[in-house]
Image 1 (tube, rainbow, N blue to C red):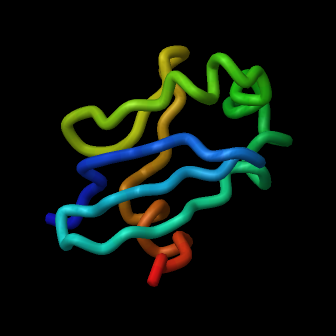
Image 2: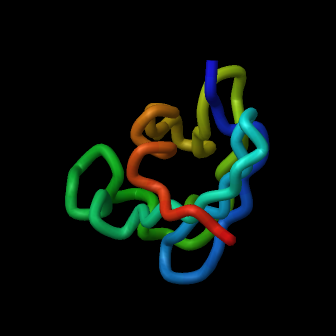
Length: 78
């Protein structure tokens, strides 16, 4: 199963993700911030609390994004 194995928060609400396939992608979280579930991530300290759990990325407040969404909508880093 393809899943993120490493995550680094970047500026402008982007994440640099390394997947179990070895691929690296940038995922833009900004479009999600208008949704109530993700609105707390506007706080930089919460956004920077992102970590990889057993299946996907998660923030300290419990927000998460499905691994297939991160992979499918992420932009491949060359």
